[in-house]
Length: 139
Image (cartoon, rainbow, N blue to C red):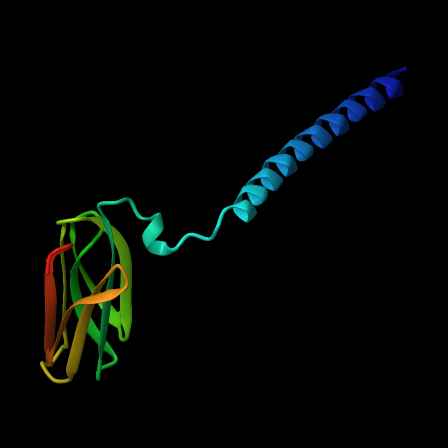
Protein backbone atom coordinates (compact mmCIF):
# COMPACT_ATOMS: atom_id res chain seq x y z
CA UNK A 1 0.00 0.00 0.00
CA UNK A 2 2.82 2.35 0.90
CA UNK A 3 4.49 1.75 -2.46
CA UNK A 4 1.32 2.72 -4.37
CA UNK A 5 1.19 6.04 -2.50
CA UNK A 6 4.84 6.67 -3.33
CA UNK A 7 4.24 5.82 -6.99
CA UNK A 8 1.17 8.10 -7.01
CA UNK A 9 3.15 10.99 -5.50
CA UNK A 10 6.00 10.47 -7.93
CA UNK A 11 3.55 10.31 -10.83
CA UNK A 12 1.94 13.58 -9.73
CA UNK A 13 5.38 15.18 -9.40
CA UNK A 14 6.31 14.06 -12.91
CA UNK A 15 2.99 15.32 -14.26
CA UNK A 16 3.46 18.76 -12.62
CA UNK A 17 7.03 18.94 -13.93
CA UNK A 18 5.86 18.10 -17.47
CA UNK A 19 3.20 20.84 -17.33
CA UNK A 20 5.72 23.39 -16.01
CA UNK A 21 8.27 22.55 -18.71
CA UNK A 22 5.52 22.67 -21.34
CA UNK A 23 4.44 26.11 -20.13
CA UNK A 24 7.99 27.45 -20.18
CA UNK A 25 8.56 26.07 -23.67
CA UNK A 26 5.29 27.58 -24.90
CA UNK A 27 6.30 31.00 -23.52
CA UNK A 28 9.77 30.77 -25.03
CA UNK A 29 8.40 29.66 -28.39
CA UNK A 30 5.92 32.52 -28.33
CA UNK A 31 8.75 34.94 -27.61
CA UNK A 32 10.84 33.48 -30.42
CA UNK A 33 7.84 33.61 -32.74
CA UNK A 34 7.31 37.29 -32.03
CA UNK A 35 10.98 38.03 -32.58
CA UNK A 36 10.89 36.28 -35.96
CA UNK A 37 7.74 38.12 -37.05
CA UNK A 38 9.18 41.57 -36.23
CA UNK A 39 11.63 43.26 -38.53
CA UNK A 40 15.06 43.73 -36.94
CA UNK A 41 15.25 47.11 -35.23
CA UNK A 42 18.12 49.49 -35.74
CA UNK A 43 19.85 50.73 -32.56
CA UNK A 44 18.57 54.28 -33.08
CA UNK A 45 15.01 53.02 -33.46
CA UNK A 46 15.22 51.24 -30.09
CA UNK A 47 16.05 54.44 -28.20
CA UNK A 48 13.33 56.61 -26.70
CA UNK A 49 12.76 59.76 -28.72
CA UNK A 50 14.70 62.05 -26.37
CA UNK A 51 17.56 59.56 -25.68
CA UNK A 52 21.06 59.68 -27.15
CA UNK A 53 23.44 56.69 -27.33
CA UNK A 54 26.85 57.87 -26.08
CA UNK A 55 30.19 56.11 -26.55
CA UNK A 56 33.40 57.42 -25.01
CA UNK A 57 36.54 56.25 -26.85
CA UNK A 58 40.06 56.84 -25.59
CA UNK A 59 43.29 55.83 -27.32
CA UNK A 60 46.92 56.86 -27.26
CA UNK A 61 50.60 56.01 -27.49
CA UNK A 62 50.77 54.84 -23.85
CA UNK A 63 49.58 51.53 -22.38
CA UNK A 64 47.70 52.92 -19.37
CA UNK A 65 46.21 56.24 -18.33
CA UNK A 66 43.86 57.87 -15.84
CA UNK A 67 40.36 58.62 -17.10
CA UNK A 68 37.68 60.85 -15.58
CA UNK A 69 34.21 60.70 -17.09
CA UNK A 70 30.56 61.44 -16.46
CA UNK A 71 28.65 58.15 -16.25
CA UNK A 72 25.06 57.17 -17.00
CA UNK A 73 23.98 58.20 -13.47
CA UNK A 74 25.49 61.70 -13.89
CA UNK A 75 28.29 60.80 -11.46
CA UNK A 76 31.94 61.61 -12.08
CA UNK A 77 34.06 58.45 -12.25
CA UNK A 78 37.86 58.22 -11.96
CA UNK A 79 39.54 55.05 -13.18
CA UNK A 80 42.90 53.67 -14.20
CA UNK A 81 42.49 52.15 -17.67
CA UNK A 82 44.37 50.24 -20.36
CA UNK A 83 44.30 51.83 -23.80
CA UNK A 84 42.36 51.66 -26.02
CA UNK A 85 39.25 52.00 -23.85
CA UNK A 86 35.58 52.68 -24.43
CA UNK A 87 32.41 53.11 -22.40
CA UNK A 88 28.85 53.09 -23.81
CA UNK A 89 25.52 54.19 -22.28
CA UNK A 90 22.37 56.17 -23.06
CA UNK A 91 21.49 59.64 -21.78
CA UNK A 92 18.59 62.04 -22.18
CA UNK A 93 18.88 64.84 -24.68
CA UNK A 94 20.65 67.77 -22.98
CA UNK A 95 22.56 65.68 -20.40
CA UNK A 96 26.15 66.76 -19.71
CA UNK A 97 28.76 64.22 -20.85
CA UNK A 98 32.54 64.48 -20.69
CA UNK A 99 35.69 62.41 -20.72
CA UNK A 100 39.23 63.46 -19.80
CA UNK A 101 42.27 61.21 -20.09
CA UNK A 102 45.75 61.90 -18.66
CA UNK A 103 49.09 60.12 -18.76
CA UNK A 104 51.19 59.70 -15.64
CA UNK A 105 54.24 61.75 -16.59
CA UNK A 106 52.69 64.17 -19.06
CA UNK A 107 54.30 62.37 -21.99
CA UNK A 108 52.54 60.43 -24.72
CA UNK A 109 49.84 61.34 -27.16
CA UNK A 110 46.19 60.83 -26.20
CA UNK A 111 42.92 61.07 -28.09
CA UNK A 112 39.35 61.14 -26.83
CA UNK A 113 36.17 60.91 -28.86
CA UNK A 114 32.53 61.06 -27.89
CA UNK A 115 30.15 59.42 -30.32
CA UNK A 116 26.47 60.39 -30.20
CA UNK A 117 24.10 57.96 -31.91
CA UNK A 118 27.03 56.40 -33.76
CA UNK A 119 28.61 59.59 -35.12
CA UNK A 120 31.65 61.45 -33.82
CA UNK A 121 30.27 64.41 -31.87
CA UNK A 122 33.37 65.57 -29.92
CA UNK A 123 37.07 64.93 -30.59
CA UNK A 124 40.25 66.09 -28.88
CA UNK A 125 43.88 65.04 -28.82
CA UNK A 126 46.96 66.21 -27.00
CA UNK A 127 50.25 65.35 -25.37
CA UNK A 128 49.75 64.12 -21.81
CA UNK A 129 46.06 65.01 -21.73
CA UNK A 130 42.92 65.12 -23.88
CA UNK A 131 39.48 66.25 -22.84
CA UNK A 132 36.13 66.56 -24.60
CA UNK A 133 32.53 67.05 -23.52
CA UNK A 134 29.35 69.02 -23.79
CA UNK A 135 25.59 68.77 -23.57
CA UNK A 136 24.25 65.80 -25.54
CA UNK A 137 22.11 66.79 -28.48
CA UNK A 138 23.84 70.14 -29.07
CA UNK A 139 26.23 71.11 -31.83
